[in-house]
Image 1: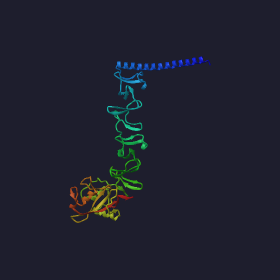
Image 2: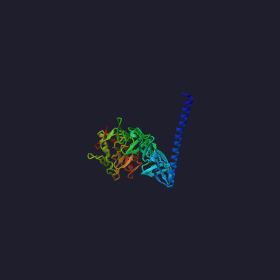
Image 3: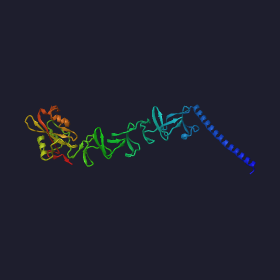
Image 4: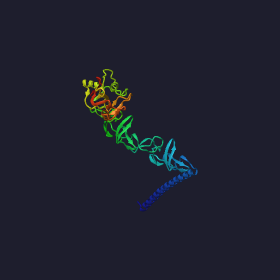
Length: 375
């Protein structure tokens, strides 16, 4: 090829290339200048007209379909109520999926820019924004779904922290560890022992656990009283009418004994001894209500009439009421004080009219009627 021709071709190519890209650069700069000019012009028009509201102004922003919030001609920053809820704007632009602070409180707007309420899981963490149309974040509280793997994704929160311990929920008590409900197993709290079943609920009454029988009370306290080898066959009505001095009548009425009633508590105790249901000790059964007998000799005639009360299966005794259907109730220690004359009953001390009180024992029958069985 002719060297001169080749040089002309190279020169021409360079010139054309320079002209082409140079025009493109000019065009891009011009477009930017036009866009900025349009934006400034639109902002000036909004300002001059004191425009307010969510206005279609794509010259200012293409975000969110080209809408921008104005207040008195200025792009607005902050919350505004619109279409039934609150939105957060910055320089008029609606902010989506983001945290915001206002009035010293924290808020979150969702993918559509709306302030959220209720329990929300955001970036894998649970948050509470209330349910009273206030929208601000507050500590997570209660049994809340947070997507955790146990118990259907629920965990217990207390003041925003995962909770360990007992909590009352849906009519009973549950045990939680790091927010997770614990199901079948033994629990320790307040120096006492409890058991929760396969659904995590604290148990009451008589329970067979791993082949052993235990009693957890029946008064809503749920703690373990001990192992038991007995079950109740007749439940007494402790709120039958009682009169001072008529202890056997009260106990017979409570257990609804309709026949073979004895003249005195000592005779009733002898009956239990004769039929082999008397236990001559103070190892009262856990979780079972049974009659307990004492020797009690009258100072008037020297006869041992005895005394009888109902062991409640938990650590105390029901004693006939004072002309009332509300019985007296005494703990084991209080009963010992009554028997040694240091505690009064219905305004009187037992030792005023009686002497040589001593425990006989307890029985699983009353007047020949079975009231509890060995298991």
